[in-house]
Image (cartoon, rainbow, N blue to C red):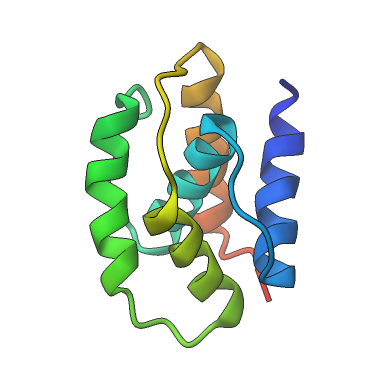
Length: 107
């Protein structure tokens, strides 16, 4: 998987307010993005279920008015995790964290 493709896919879905995340590559980027926006500390080597358990409840209760960020929250709390975890997950989470801290626009 080319990490940039997962990042672009999440960004486009949020801008268009359409579609769902299709795998853990997108999930790790999206979770990192959300964590970066909200200044949430997260270990880049976190397991899939632990990351979901950390981020999904926060995303579900988030009250952002930004349409792109609102859709990001929806993607996160509606995501159904799978068992896939490989060496690219930490990279994708880190990319998301960096983009979130830069406050890239999803609208």
